[in-house]
Image 1 (cartoon, rainbow, N blue to C red):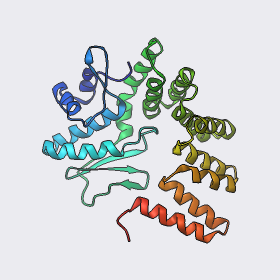
Image 2 (image 1 turned 120 degrees about the vertical axis):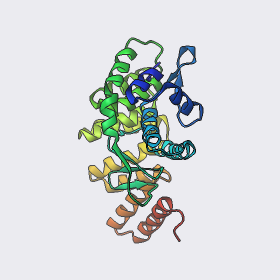
Image 3 (image 1 turned 90 degrees about the vertical axis):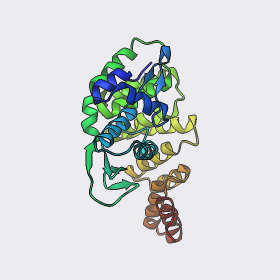
Length: 274
């Protein structure tokens, strides 16, 4: 079973084990269970617990902490690297910054400000140890290997592809593993190989919106504008897909369609606007 034990997390964060278990029982975290019903925490659980410790150290009441952490839990992505994110707290309200985009923005002075990359460096030895142990564990499922790959992307990116390929060895139709391998290949400029994995992801799950979106960006990289438009349309109601469709329709002179998708984008990112 992959993941990190309560003791490992306690030692890493200098957070008491009973407090960690209390947050787990409160439903703020999503730990797995090992033999003996012991908790096994993923990297995202550690991010949440790190935030909890910062909030407690700032003297914020536990009820406000739980509210903030539920918000954080809903915003953290599960299938991409976390190292580009910054987690900030303003009077108990947690916000997440991804480059220039702010999720659930609050105004006012930021009292706590730490980079997930800083935490990733601390977790790296644990993730690498988990990867070494996984190679000797015949009970790892394809989902276990996929989850390990997600963790490794954040702390040891060079080891992540191996975990995703292990997932595919166990389940060649693991759509999300194909998506993440495709993304890594696309980032390396290996566009043909990336395209193959995106198509495999969509063959395994035609409703995989992220696979469609990423494939659309790849077609843009290749200058295949009509193919990109057709593919973005398969990305469902992803806000960024609507934005890209608006931009591409404007580029090809279809102003009505461009406006339609721009309106859809704005409605998704700000539902309360007129």
